[in-house]
Length: 214
Image (cartoon, rainbow, N blue to C red; front, side):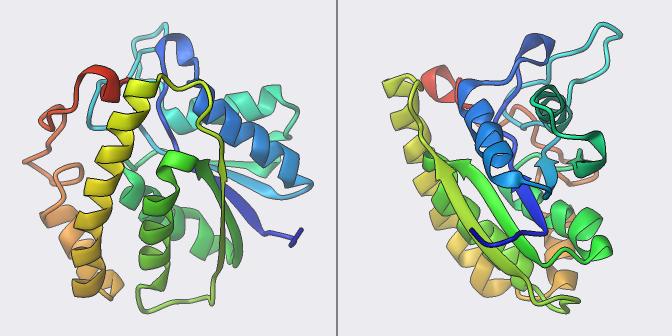
């Protein structure tokens, strides 16, 4: 196996009390299995599709922080764990991981571990964001997915369809936006998860079984 500078684990939901869904635990377990002495970077504040659970002091539980605690419980030293608590989608996972951790620490060889249902969009989003110019590093990006076993079949079908739609939307963006400056402008002016005023939390009509995968 190649020696990676960091393993990145996208968020995939968090439940009451900081409990993680089975598919997120599977990503983290695989990262631990592969990690050796590698830096682990857990990603995501949460999702726009549902409000976050709150801790005992009524503060939100970030997905990446819940994931970091899971890694600590699995024996990963705290000095090998970094969290990213700004993103609310896969595109944000890629952008904020790059500008907050990867570039400042000059982490070049990267592995992203996610779920089978999420792999195609994750690959496209990360390859796009990490190709934006100017680049301070020549990144080496690898991807690995873990099984979707245990996800309710109707929920998985709905999520796979949502992933196909989002992947199609992503294709137009990757052709239009090729620089960090233009991406930054688009993210904070047009993307409703990050817009200063028109933040689209709860506005996307995802419900029922599909919502259970967030």
